[in-house]
Length: 87
Image (cartoon, rainbow, N blue to C red):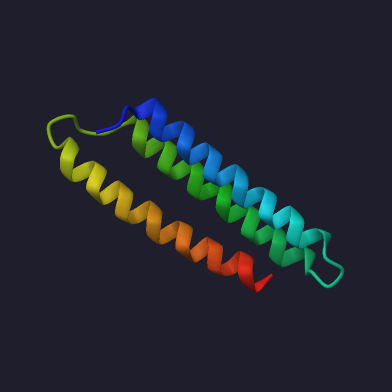
């Protein structure tokens, strides 16, 4: 199991890359500003949610927590990437 700080840094890097991708999409001439703002807001909310979950978890059941954490974050990231591609 990786250390929590490494997971937090990785999560931050991924979210920053996604925010950068939304800014690139916004730079296009035909991008809808409201949709880009909604995606950016969702990215920030997902980051805050998973970062706080990572800070507060039960140490007794860590293996199950991190399995569920990984599955949940992957599902959220896939959905966000799909939304960014539609922009």
